[in-house]
Image (cartoon, rainbow, N blue to C red; front, side, top):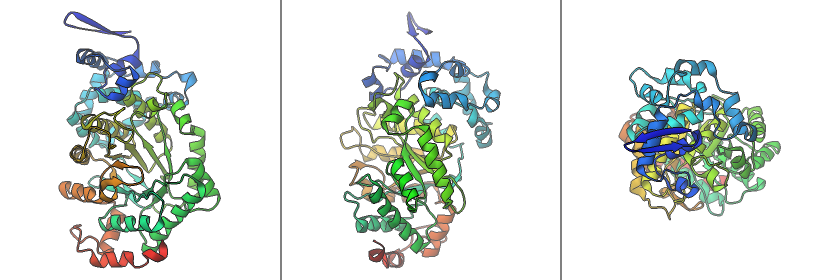
Length: 461
């Protein structure tokens, strides 16, 4: 039991799970779940109480029972006590103040990362303002490698997302060419297939691989079909670069996705045996999003932001090349409006980076949310300042297959130009060699490059 008195009212919080939920900034998902603070006064009381909770409490009180949940067991069993030792005497409030201090830098945070649990970073995020989330996240440099090097300071990558409502090869190839001409695609060329089966996935894998090899593009591909389809595709000899899977923060929610830790380990091992990377072996691509556990009725009464942070423990286990929080995709039932989406995107990015993950954010919203492209421009700009590893590049910012709004190829150009950011180094060199950018890394008159890239488009598609 945790208690805190504000003026003449004493607020009681039954356990750590309840305290975390009540301390969370307002969002529609927690209200839907019945775990949110009922008043602003209760939320402030919970935040003040949470600030005084020792970090060791999170190692002694599981918010999802250890015996019932393999994600909890993963978090507890693989916690690094030596890495945790320098801050083991901290409270949550102490951790916030320390993270914001001048002396804390990337090397310190990298060493600390294995000693932090998802619940610890979720807790400290609840005490932070927008600028706090940005300031700490930009200290973290998380570098991963496959065919190029991602996450270096001063770099911003993009996922080129050429989805098509019928998986038409010519439509997909045209979108890929369009994105490449804007310098997009260094994080991954990743397709969400309209048909979720092995044969469709293999057709798209072959398409992207032929384009990549034809133009010697130093990037990686991914077809975002279910992990079991990708395991079968690898068995059949398909050109699988990255293995994708959506993941969540509880065993029950992952079961709703048709996965568990053992299945992810099988896929990870299979991808490693292919040895398709040129400069590294980070072979996994995970996507997450606040509200996924609640939508599956698998949240155990835990608030959605803490559930989301627990998904990062699953991701961390498999050393991914990319982790992407698709922040506004699930809908207004979980993040009601632009204000909530902006806050959630920065929380997710902050928590993932502190836990040592290569975080990207799909800056997005559904058409029935109380949000618009101005909100997305704000979140995109904030994430650029927070040193986000990558964002999405979608033709016109409008995904015509998944029917949601995201960021465009132009948005990646904007963010790089505004903040002086550059693509992954290997990909940047390719862009210069093909004449898409000049020596100052500015986009050139791309008529010649367009002709080169389009030369074999019909043959490839």
